[in-house]
Image (cartoon, rainbow, N blue to C red; front, side, top):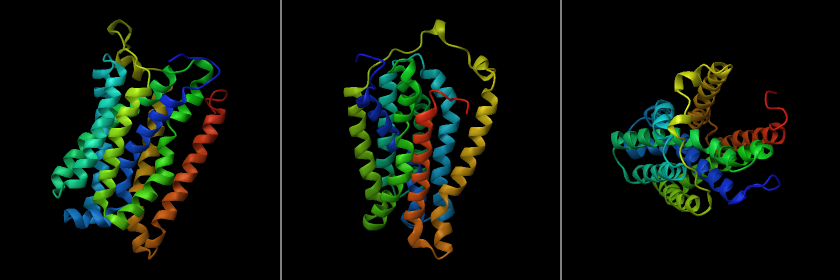
Amino acid sequence: MARTEQRLPLGGLLALATAGFLTMLTETVPAGLLPQIGRGLNVSEAQAGQLLTVYAAGAVLAAIPLTAMTRGLPRRPVLIATVTAVALVNVVTAVSSSYALTMTARGLGGMATGVQWAMIAGYAMRLVDEPLKGRALAVSMAGVPTALALGVPLGTYAGDLLGYRYTFAAIGVLALGVALWILATVQPFPGEPASTRIPLRQVFLLPGLAAILVTALLFEVGHMNLYTYVAPYLHRAALGDWVGPVLLAFGVAAMAGLFAAGAFIDKNLRA
């Protein structure tokens, strides 16, 4: 795949964005289906909400060590493996009647997600030359707010209409298709040679990185606390019919922020 300064490799970038879309959907769609999942697994809504917690915890715990362990491997097979893992997690969630099994599967899926999140942005920027890196990053990450804006409300609607198991089964099948899409359109890259890898302790000492990590942590804690329990909150406030619209508004705002970032990031990164 030839790289130029004039055009983005949209096929590959959209494949990355779709992988992110389905991964974010896998993580967050239970937020709109907690009552149904609780009944299906014979647990409370609070326990069902822990399906999001364990997924996020897996991503947090695995992101740094697994990324460090795999960064010497060819990039595309690692990325495809993470997407395939997400597909399998959804299939297990669709068929499992065991809370413990579902929790275990989602924890492992979160670990794959941690590696994938660490890869997508870097992969997108390797596909283009310097002037297009910010826009490539914005396109590749568009799947995340799209999942929040459209995917989760639609998943919630489908879960209400057909049952949550069919929703997860559909996400699993789509994820397998995206794995094939990545294989067909995303340029392969080798892993990092051992001689060029920066030790993790040096990465953590980079100026400003600690502030960025703390900011990201606080942002995600606030985001996930709100997003995870929005459905039970609205139900208890006698606003159960508003779950879809509220999630839609949440995601539309996220998309607006992404487009704004994509327009200005290359010239005003710090701002």
